[in-house]
Length: 326
Image 1 (cartoon, one colour):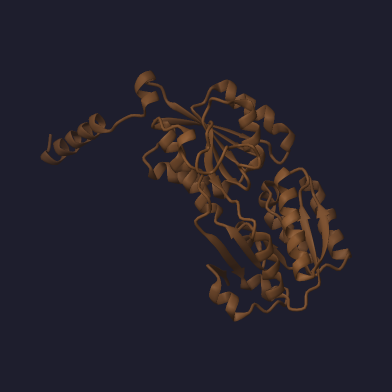
Image 2 (image 1 turned 90 degrees about the vertical axis):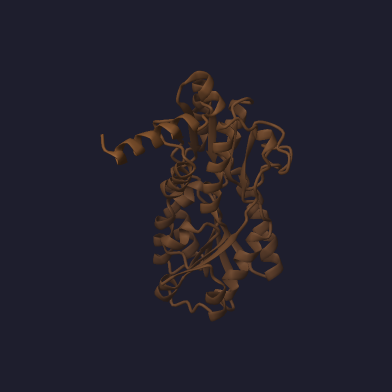
């Protein structure tokens, strides 16, 4: 055998012997299982989560296996799917969004749960406090009560003289109640007339956006919701036909053609969730892992979409933007 080949095999043997395995794997010798529960599939964000696990040294099929469950927009299916993951006795359950996190929490009080992007984990009863979760749930939160006001302020910057703003929300999402209240409070402050339109399912989107156009709204603000994110391009296309500029709190809408988005960096939230999973698989307890709040709020401007709708984006906004899609 050549000297180089012997050196490579020797190094591989040393690494294999010296790399510590998670406590659970050491005891059982089995592949650990990671459950992933979502209200609606969001492949782009989920890919970031799995990529980060890979960067941390986790290899799917080698030291962990994936159990994916999605309600595909039907929130009523989440409790059943969460119970299924609990019966499988996976080592950790990752939950995307508030509804999935609540369903998982009700399904198990013992399996560790890592939530992603939950707006109000304390108010939702998921954790005792952000600093000291105290149970089997931890992860990342996007809580920020000032965001709805900043989104409406963004509309005012983009559309000087605006007076009527449509809001698209999902009343089936418990978090949307709080978001709508905060948006209404901001609208009162800015003396804006809000026109509220609801969509519980993808089938409701055409009707809701068409109604906003019929009522002569001047802009459409889309409140965060997993179903809306999954259908971001469709929502934007429907709004564009009505000549409605779209503003949202989720960055994915900017790529879909919204003229602007402002909100927590969901990409970072998904990546950070992988770190929580890695630590839990190494025997850390969720109760001891503080919930992480957004480290960054991102402003994205789609100047191409703005030009299509005849909206002039102020240079000051371009200068402030974290991302500009041209």
